[in-house]
Length: 261
Image 1 (cartoon, rainbow, N blue to C red):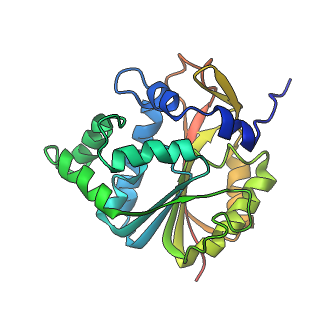
Image 2: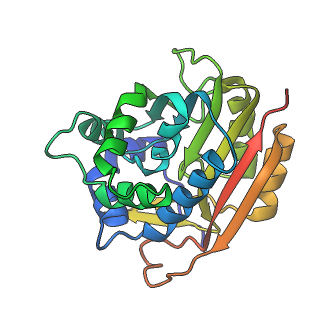
Image 3: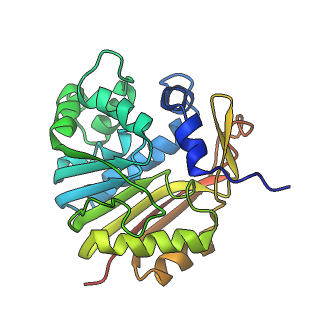
């Protein structure tokens, strides 16, 4: 029996950003440590060995998280963060403003600093990221212009992590979002999507949220149909399956694509 689809209003009303951070990213008990390290490793490689850099990076569906931006702040002059939920952006703002109640991302910052060979520069890394975040916006993946009424000028790179499987109900709607992203990316610019494979639900606190099931062949078809050239695609099965009752994702993916010139 299929899980009922979670509406946007359900997210507005019932998604608890603090519970999400504690459940999935806590230094000791976080369920997504495996996923976060996968993301940080591939973004580090993309922005160093891969040579991807530019003026502006747009993070679509940032949530209350910062780990996906820790390598980007070294190679982009400006970062725009955005999310549908005000409660997510409120938590994010706490970290940006060094609020004492902000979530502690030190363990993730250390991980990226070690990848970069600068183990002792954690505070410098945090300050650099804070200084690069220039705008905090509301976005809605289901709108033709996700930032309506704001017009965001095309950027060098659009990144989205653990986002599109939430608002999209099937691969057709996912493909439509990718097509809309074309307007937000400069010719020759990059699109990077990181998320979970073959899942159907995730829990935040006591609330269960539905997730679109993403399959490798469908994802690659969607990127190509939306007009992108896939530069790199990585699909990895889930290693730690001890908590599938909380989140049933079977794997994870990283897709790096380019918009044609």
